[in-house]
Image 1 (cartoon, rainbow, N blue to C red):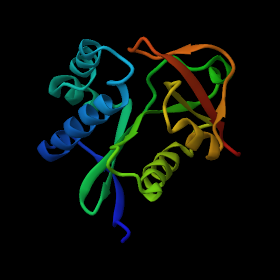
Image 2 (image 1 turned 180 degrees about the horizontal axis):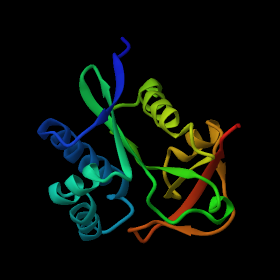
Image 3 (image 1 turned 90 degrees about the vertical axis):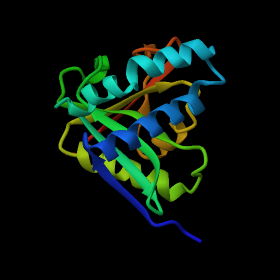
Image 4 (image 1 turned 120 degrees about the horizontal axis):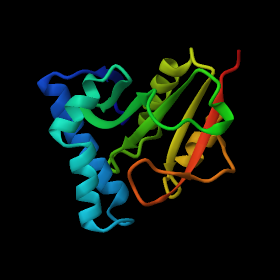
Length: 174
């Protein structure tokens, strides 16, 4: 049976914050527990996804937060932001970044990932380019490439984690 899948913007209501706290912390643990020491994961969570840190980021005019729901249950999230060090190839362009894209491991239905990603792209379409900086082991990298993002050759680093990363860029078609 297919899920009813809806992706929508999230704001700083109590329900929105509870949903984001759950998703950000659970997905970060799923992503990084096998790659980092437990204290590194917990430090990352407290610096980036504590209730206080998340409230600041959700209320920032630089960010837009999306949550994808499957049968009314939160399944994943993404943050679209103007923050972050832009890749050299697009530093002169009007660009936007898809950051923190993640889906809970319990939700493997491809349509869930596609719904969240399509909503991200609809938000990003007015920019000259969209970029993603993700850890090199991220299982979504091949998905991003299948959606027209091109892996860059120069070396990148993640903003806050000691993991190798890759940068992917998609130029707008206008």
